[in-house]
Amino acid sequence: MKAIEHSPLMKLVADRIRERILAGEFAPGARLAEERLSAELGVSRMPVREALRALAAEGIVTIEPRRGASVTSYSDEQVLELVEVRSTLEALNAKLAAKRSDPRQIAVLERILSEGSKVNERSDLAELQGANDRFHEAVAAIAANSVLTQIVRSLRERTALIFAPISRKRVRQNWEEHAGIVRAIIAGDAELAALLAARHVYNAAQTPEEAETAKPRRARMRA
Image 1 (cartoon, helix red, strand yellow):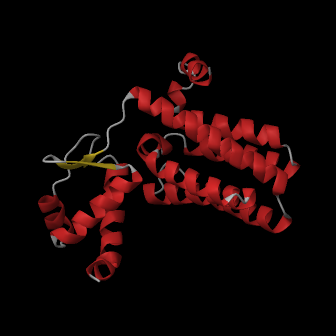
Image 2: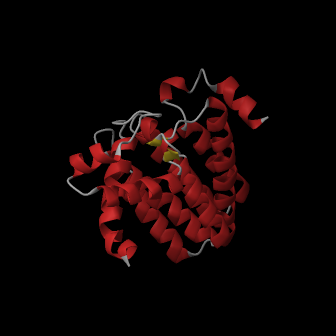
């Protein structure tokens, strides 16, 4: 019963901690002390503890015996592995969407694309992430594979730490790439939609300034 009573507050606390982590307020590896967070957020330690457990399930927080909670820190190898898997699954989502699209769902996707294209480098981080999530969820809705949707959603949460610091720097490029994916889906070009979706994930893991120098690295990742 207690878990149910604390649930709404726990979600609010988890959302706030997640925001601060993704905004870079807590660096990878930084400890997340329950006492300090409860004081800063003006809540008891119980909802903070529950929130940290929920964030650990998302992969944003790591909880270790005797050390407690800290911001998850990925090695370069782990980043490559996560990007490889997410790019493959996002490509499958786009491919299925191009094969199964219907006019009503396409209209929703186009509206989300239009709204998302209005965000810019000065937009709030939560707004940037929300718009991006709505786009990818709309593509998944068209793909209509519930198993794939659940897996990609979970993976999207785990990769949030990788993409969040870069998203503001390449927000315009992200939405230009989203537009290309939408055009391929509308045209029913499944192979092109998959290619653009996979490329988008690789591109989103780097800043525009890194794009040219990272080409050899992308080739290794695809090999």
